[in-house]
Length: 259
Image (tube, rainbow, N blue to C red; front, side, top):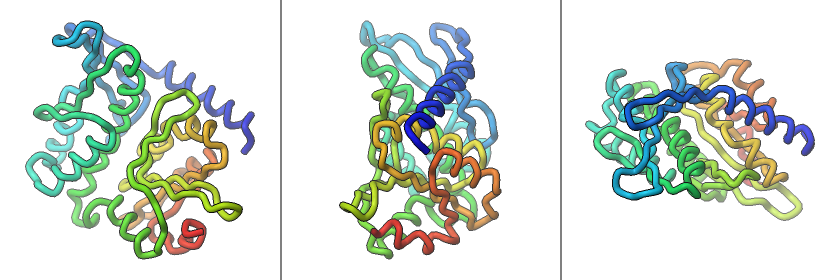
């Protein structure tokens, strides 16, 4: 892939995002239904309203939909100490707050787009906590990947926010620094439930970041402990110039990541 191809992808992605947003009035707020999908393949949405406490500022909230849907599906995040701890870690990594069941953020006009971006990424990551409720998934997949990186003596930094060409930020679970003349910077995303929608969410912002960090390489760890990863998911990853890493085959990539 070259820079011209990457720019075409960025332009296409921006057009897809813009054309896919639907705005509706919801009382004193506006609800934005976005093209990003949750684990149920439903479009994710959040509300934006003027702040009642600060003139010129905004409040962004999912209205409790993310945690409410998890609880309805049998995954009570707030009722489990271990899941609540994971939730708080996730919220902190995106700078998102919790009030009751609502995921929310406050922003002024200068930070509004960044906060919208962070809230959407956070909602997708919290939605993925559903898979910590399944007996077949032991613990939290990102923790498993961190343990594997440690066992392979691979140096990394956790939960890093990187800015793209647009100025917006995208969170990566791990960043492995470049090694001079040997290996480029390697970014790592982990997906506990590899579905087409979760892969699209993981690729959110990647093209933007890639255009600003031309030599970086994205590795997407796919949890295949319960089911084989479909070929369409692998194709989606490679189409964006990323490296799909099935969890069962992680050891095959240890040398590349340790370089």
